[in-house]
Length: 418
Image (cartoon, rainbow, N blue to C red):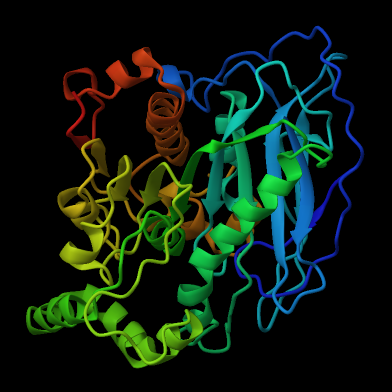
């Protein structure tokens, strides 16, 4: 049974798929075969021992802003069912071509949770602007296989393709994304409470947020980074004077500042650092090519929890991971730079979304320099080791992240971990 989702650009209301009643008994079962996307996958890129369940929910479906929420969790598979899964996607552009689109993955729809090691630490995933969570199933499914539960948050936003430079919902996106994270965690507390649909499954005392591009901005904001417009204006002006193409991002953000502030509840617009939009339940973040230019030094210094920042060095939006690593106050932080890689390495590879190649949008799933399955494996390796360390206290995972133990061709790695 496949499911309807929106991918790439999404701004529609969704059908509510009720969560089926789950059976909490734990039966003997064989673990899935360990494997990575490539034969040379490093240790923490090899699949973990848990089967993967997935279900669809909607937060506050009758409100003005319902949030589609997709949950992945360790699941029972005592009969050894084939977990090959096709996520069926309904692409919505404006104008929207009719495409038969899918994402190929591994999951069991509405499977009974595996409570043998519950509750599981929670990872909230925030996708890039106008995309949806199914573009990151390689990472989501991998984390679940290692004993995490993932909440995939569908931010309601979209893009006009009539004019590629015109984005719809940009101001609401910057304002609403941090709120969406808080609402998702609030909702998860009800899910895992006594009598909830996923009773006892989620450990909300151990929470991380990860995200790509605007999702990286979301992770930074959720960790307590505070907008610093004065510093952003200085950075933008310097970039324009130096001919830095990244300064074009400022042209999109600056005219909308007052609107973003008002939508975030800051009216009039604050002077100096904006109030935090963070959530104290967040214990760690993994921004992937995360936009950080609107926070800059003082704003990023508000982050004190563990941080793993990742980026391609040729990313056209690379005002992100470097400043995050440099300025965050966290005592435990790391930077992973993929030399020569661009912006899309953090999404699924084209094997999982072959239709993108057929419509000449291969650039969304294929990096010109890096083999995408390799980057997916490396991202899985770093992310999994980091979360096992900071959320589960895994000493071996911590050791794997020490500078002397990280050596991959094409990876520049810095860390404060000892």
